[in-house]
Image (cartoon, rainbow, N blue to C red):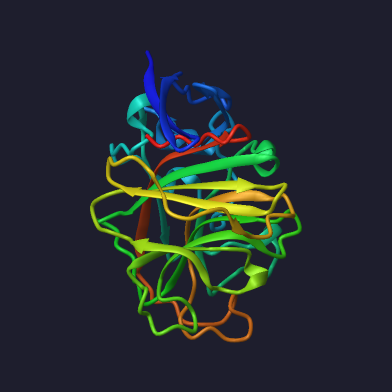
Length: 296
């Protein structure tokens, strides 16, 4: 079974055949672009697969204590832009009152944060050379966010845990007036402040599709975006951004408190009785050393 993939090459759209993804495989090919890590789920995948080691995501990180990912991840039957061609399905990541992460199992739980994040089991090749990270996302209408809070949804965290090389956020950014609370914001390295590199409305009931072309040699990031089933469109030129530090990708819901104190991980307000989620689809990383980026 084959699908078509479209690439940017010298300003022209080039169409080629793409091979079908299988859940247990982390390498496949889309024409001349190699998929170096693939987080798309086959139609036969179940929530229980997230508790084992055979799938594309780690079974232990990042989530609250004494809870399994199978209790936090749901498969709603949706498909996004890059799921259809490979017979994949989307997934929903949720947080609730028990989504309190304790790093390393320590006695210092992050009591002011509610977080559930999926992390790839093997993505070391995703943070070198020139790679394009693809993902689609939408709010779970049955588990809406409270946009008076700031949400961190996708990010790359350095291996030393002291910075994020890029961040995708929504909601009311801490310290802001909330003017962008219904937008998706793509921000650069957390050491360089919070000025967005790109923003787009986070529309309801449709996937927002994002591709981030990252040059880890030149330290640049370039944004491609579309909505629904539309092909990705280049939205920025390559932008200077410090991508050093290797690290790991995170996909999920990281809900920050309102009115945080000096220690924003452990002080601030979180309302009780929450059940919130984001639906993700089409998650994969391709090698773009040849300049190609899949657009649909």
